[in-house]
Amino acid sequence: MQITILVGTVNGNASSVAQALQFCADDIGATIDVLPMDGFTITALDTPGAFIICTSTTGVGDVPPNAAGLLHSLDAEAKYLGHVRYGLVALGDSSYGDSFLGGGKQFDAKLQDLGARRIGDICVLDAMETVQPEDDAVEWLKAWAVQLATLA
Image 1: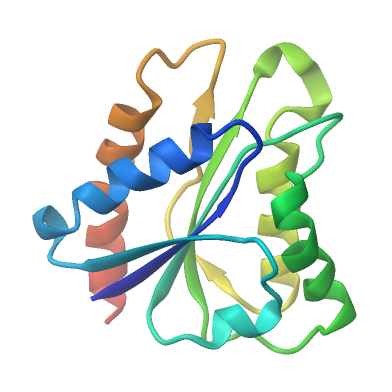
Image 2 (image 1 turned 135 degrees about the vertical axis):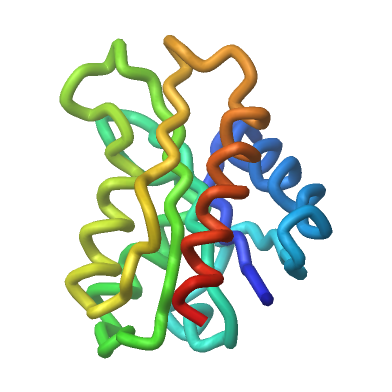
């Protein structure tokens, strides 16, 4: 099973989580590539395999600057993404209220609007509650991979 993790990050927290997921590739029988979203467009989703969007939130619910191009491309170059299966790892801080997980929620909404199918629940990593985000994400990945495998 091929999984590509697309990372949107400002301070590196999402990158650390993505790397922890990559280290578990053998545990779930997968090959996992971790790629920062820098310079990516919608064509990045043409790659075979499943995807995990791993993104933090910045400002008032915005995606990180390195993820803005891909998010914009989902509108500007919109096309049907019915072949895309993805998971979402969203990092944020619930003390920010309504903008909590805004970056992840934006990707989720746009991908679903284009026909992509999210597998499983969103992995919510709240800076106010999660002491070890990498550990929580790894547990999520194991359950997510089982759900993904049932679709194959």
